[in-house]
Image (cartoon, rainbow, N blue to C red):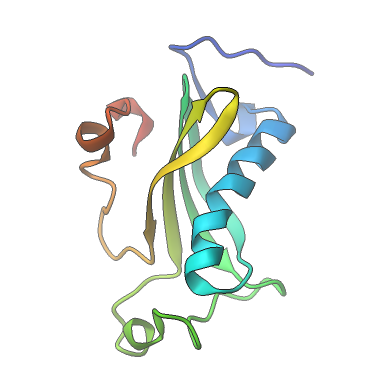
Length: 128
């Protein structure tokens, strides 16, 4: 099955072709894996696409499917103090046929993406 999305149309993760979903998740994973210094798997909670924009909210897991541990990362003390979640949010934009990360929130405890539409010019309808 092939799906073509026009610039103004929206798609959820279930409506995206698997290859596109995988590309978005792989690109979104790069900054968090780099920041934490370890590989990260996602359990997707929200993945929306509108035109050349995509927005992801995911629970982070380790390679064995357990919630990510921040032990040994720059976020270890925040985890020890209960000041970080296991969630990850990313805003991506398709540019020149390649998805690029525009902004991220690692371990947000609030709506860290609230200002992203204004800050980055992303469509407000993309966000929950």
